Image (cartoon, rainbow, N blue to C red; front, side):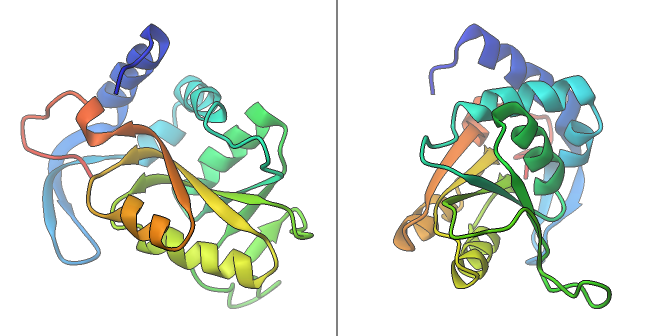
Length: 183
């Protein structure tokens, strides 16, 4: 990927702030020596704003709604909503067990073309599940955005289900870490 000076600077800031060399356990039982800590990104207001501004360029022109997946996608979608002026919804992995008992919160879907937003995409399974949830609820989904894409099949899985993945960075864009790959 060829990066502009501003994206190169953002990449360096993301690597410095959010790439952590430490053991990390994956949900599937795997283990990494280093990982991308989306909470460090979300906790840095300037970095979050700059990341959202860079991601705004990836939002397809026909998008009418942004959908952030809990938990890493929520701060990103809030910042991206502010950067683009598009309304947002927030997706829980499961419906809330009390109160509203909703899985989708925020702006009304109203059949608006929706773009999924998440922090890191690995296998694509979670994005695919959320795309299905939105489609069933009446929101067309054909695009997803992420900060970091790992080459573990997510792009291909999503494409098989008519969702195009747009990533700000891929694992190859990050500087090498001492301990191994970043999640």
